Image 1 (cartoon, rainbow, N blue to C red):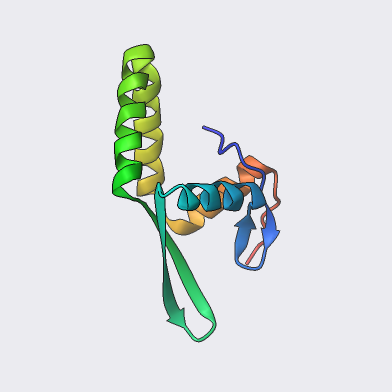
Image 2: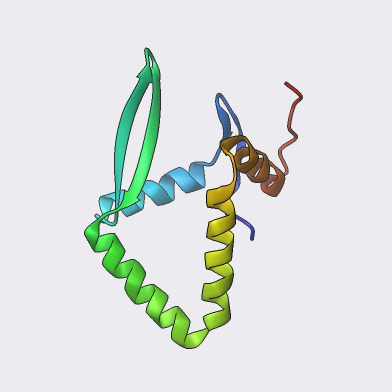
Length: 106
């Protein structure tokens, strides 16, 4: 399933200004929350999760999709499960592949 965002090479891997803008909008709307974890000096990890408001909206969208197109909901659930089971390097490679970014050998 394509990501739907364009990515470009960046310091730590693929970066999407479109995805960043979408996340900023979701955070401003109170649907997603961001937490920042300091990993070491000058290195951080950004974690994102749905707020209670975001969870309620997700459930209403899921219910509407199940009524209109139950196969789509199953396909999305399968795709999410596959992404959850992938290692981070594999997800990065997939993002690069979907965006047409050439991977460089280590």
